[in-house]
Length: 193
Image (cartoon, rainbow, N blue to C red; front, side, top):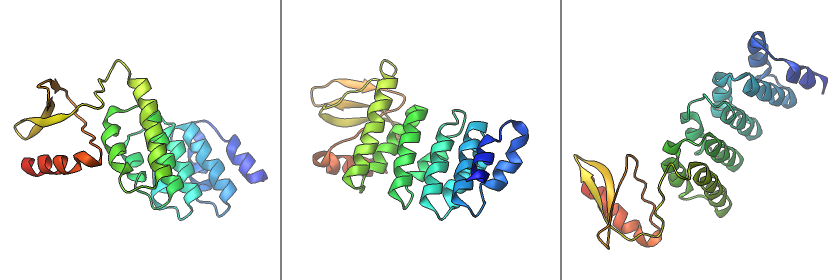
């Protein structure tokens, strides 16, 4: 309606207070317009609150998407949204995390796949593919390597050793075995304490 149109037209540094107030309006259209404008304005605080607390999953998903478009925003609220009770919010979080291209989100994205319906696992896998494309040349992927063990130094994983004796080291090491490797990974984790 007209109120939503007017809210969408608000911009500039002085619009923040009005947009924050509109984001809690009883009218869903006004709230969605405020969320969109808050995202353009780059004001993450009310978006985080809406993503965590609003009862309407459409509002939570919109807040997560708007938050994800703020490039300077911290990653943590999106990682929390990966565990939302609503699949639409979880999918929005996965897409937003992927848009930030933050290497530290790869592990949480892989973890978030566990126990999810196939559609959500596909969405996360698509996000990881997009991130892989963006990270090409910056991160080394070694899929389908049979890992013999983790290389540990002072209780920190520094790399992996393959059954062929090859060793791969990195600041960040992500091990993502399939079902057949789940028991191995559990044993490795327990050995670390």
